[in-house]
Length: 206
Image (cartoon, rainbow, N blue to C red; front, side, top):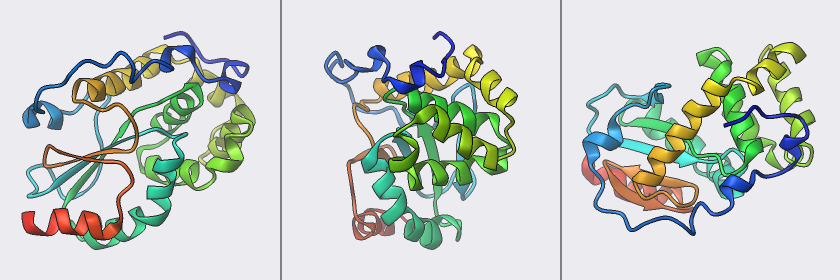
């Protein structure tokens, strides 16, 4: 993966365009493999490993459906199940274009405690920053303490970009073709879902 320039941030990467079209048929998910943390490590909240319920979300920072979930469903899900440590929640990056990859690189390069607040900012202001990703991402990054220099260096970090793309490739292996895509204890739970739908799926497992 080559480094990302300001110019490239204005365009979706061609390499992402055929993601779903070339996807092969997928076998049943190996839960042990699915739960295995990627080389960059998992970004997780809530209960520790071994929880009765683990939700894994694959999302793209530029996906409006993901943004809708994080605006309308996530706050209640987090308050009722994650903050109370009833479940373990894992967020995995599945960039669908270059701006999404850049956003994830910024979040990963920030202090760990800033990761989820940054994701909230990306999803919460998606319609604004996505109009001019280079400027919009820089403005959000500055709120997390980034300088222009650190911002530029982060977007040139090919090892970081590779690690995030490996997470996306892992998702493809498990059948992820679009976002948001959820797994609840290894079972696919795709698309936009209401809080009540999550509750109905989670409660019998607790």
